[in-house]
Image (cartoon, rainbow, N blue to C red):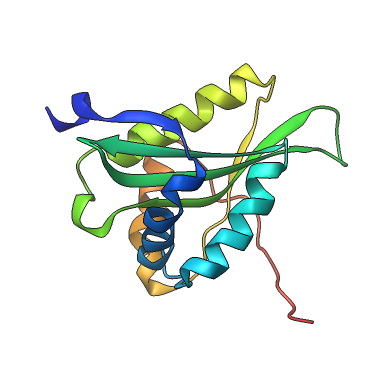
Length: 147
């Protein structure tokens, strides 16, 4: 089974080129230079973690995680800020493995809630169905204002 071949590990600077391609697959094209700047800041932040899924030395998915502190109640939460499986490797179980690895890290950090944001665009409908299948409920709306 292909999922038996998936290795989950932390992303490193040497992975930025592949991460740039994954962000494009997610619908957020960026240049390598842009991603270098972003990941320099992310890698330096202690509450952020980027995990990747690897099969036979090929990076096939990633989850960008951020641990946060609630304002509205006691405790911590984990927000999955970026989540993507390579376009050519979808529907093989890699996403399930990445979600489980994210949840395992949350538990290790003393976190008991995981949040995922996903855009309300047609191309995200499959992702929304996947999140719900993984036990995530639609709970809120997000609002954005560009300044």
